[in-house]
Image (cartoon, rainbow, N blue to C red; front, side, top):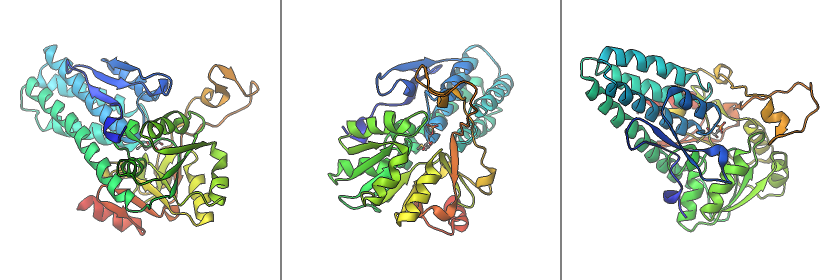
Length: 354
Ligand code: MRU
């Protein structure tokens, strides 16, 4: 099993009017695909994390807009009407999760393409949007592959790598970001040992990262989130690789809640801490981490394990889905254009310009 043979997470339906997704809430127990056709189902899929991971949400949003445009064109809407509706639906899609910038990035890209064809026929518009959504997917795959190469250059055979949440093929296209270098190492026969934080409360590390890596034949050991200090202290971790939902212009990076804690531990133990992210995850319009919107999710995700309540009734709960790791805790940001180093402001500006 290689990155090439990991299951496809999202694709445009055969009819062009629907999107097929691998339901990540059912993993690892069941590999179950669902087809979504209307906006409500699309938003629900993002909100409930059936589709998750910043780049995957962006790719999914591209396919969603393509499918919606095709439906409207076949229903006989004229171009101005189609553009108006698409804009409205795109805004609703963007509002479904706030932190990952790839979602608004992909919707903006699709809308830019659409408005460039305001003078064309509805059929032309739908065809262009389908091509654009496939291009977003293809480019994401290429970016992940390049990130994998750059990231692998930072590792050597026998290294232990700690990761948090899931930034593998399920969260992107093919290789993933943080898991890309690890999967590539596996393909090349370079042995690594991965420690996967289970990632409370939704267990993306336990359910998804461990599943992807084990399928790929990578040596992976699951740890509870509060064991990271122990494995680092034991000298088993030579690098931390995490994904990212949004990098601000100054290099502050939002990722799954608990990531900042991992970065602080890594700093304490002198272990390099890398954030892997395509340039589409960098948001130059967000000046720093304080301006990144942090999603808060339902209490139930913390108060319950499955159907069982584990917290006394009435106890207040915080459920922040993400935290921000300050730029000064990040050893490098691994992008498709290479590894960016501090000072991140100029490094990011140059990478986005090139
Ligand atoms: O809430 P999730 O599961 O969507 O959170 C995902 C993460 O935090 C990932 O690390 C991030 O999106 C990067 S995915 C390449």
